[in-house]
Image 1 (cartoon, rainbow, N blue to C red):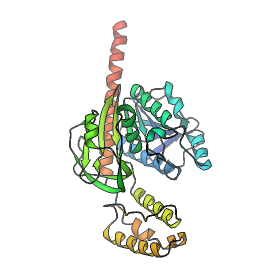
Image 2: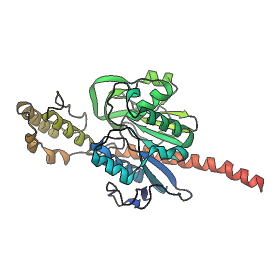
Image 3: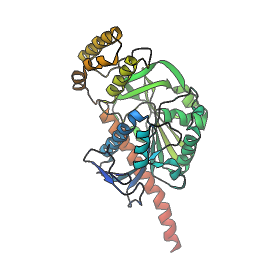
Image 4: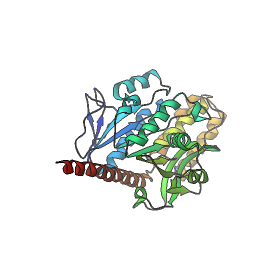
Amino acid sequence: MPLSVLSGDNPIPSAKDKSVLCAPGQKQANHPNGCLRIALVNNMPDSALEDTEFQFFELLSAASEEIPIQVALYSLPGVQRSDRARQHLDQFYSSTTVLRNQRVDGVVITGTEPLQSDLRNEPYWDSLSELFNWAEENTLSAVLSCLAAHASSLQSDGIRRHPIGNKRFGVFEHQVIAEHPLTHGVVNPVRIPHSRWNELRRGDLELGGYKILTESSRAGVDLFVKEKKKSLFVHFQGHPEYLAQTLHKEYRRDVKRYLRMERENYPLVPESYFDPLSVNLLGDFRAMAERERRESIMESFPEAQVVETLQHSWRPAAVRIYQNWLNYLTLRKAQDVEPFFMARVGQS
């Protein structure tokens, strides 16, 4: 079933796939009966803004099966943006302030790159807190990705995240440890990418009333849920939406930052992601980069050899989890409509 994106006056550039349709001329619309209304609040940094759009378009489209979906794009006030990114947001996005008087079936809220050790000191904290409060009352379910998951559990339950030293970066195997509609049909092991410097811990989450659904011996908790007022809050510490090359792009970006003297240490290779030959090639390039620390040597980066071996190994699990989420929304929506319909019948 094609995914329809409400995108302002022109088709959004990141909606390149033929399974993604655009509805130019509007950023919001009245949705046909039976269509799921999804709000995507994209807070990712400028370098990943458009890639993140496409990642979620691809995943939701693959997961939708026969369920019609319309997605509207929103941005959070207070997130620092370049002029180019601001132009993109102005053209295709609405502010989250528009959501305050609306209801949608589901919302997906991404993370962003934190600037403060305490998230409550971020310039967008108040806007993000208002968004979480709105979602509790005006959605059937909210998906919170990475930093958004950390911020939500801090805002509602005071659960603090913990620094983990080296970046948790790569593709990690998880086990489903609890039954839940979201994990129905998900086969162990569940491979999910992670890219973060902080973590929420199982003990803290369980004390806060959260249900842990998947966990890794290497990466810790990934998927966990909690009912908050009228909405099921679904939290991911990892990134099931990532495409096959996403971790590679991030690694390559960090290598360039090292060569430009924007970071002190050479980045670690993402774990369990590249094949052994690629790891060797990247190790040879690292040795060269540490000898000749200048950006021009990126011309020798083994791009083609590495990219051709990448595998989208987490795709089946990601699609199944999001299929389950869309099915959950459809069921909840039908349950909410039925009492209203019966009440109207009783009055006739």
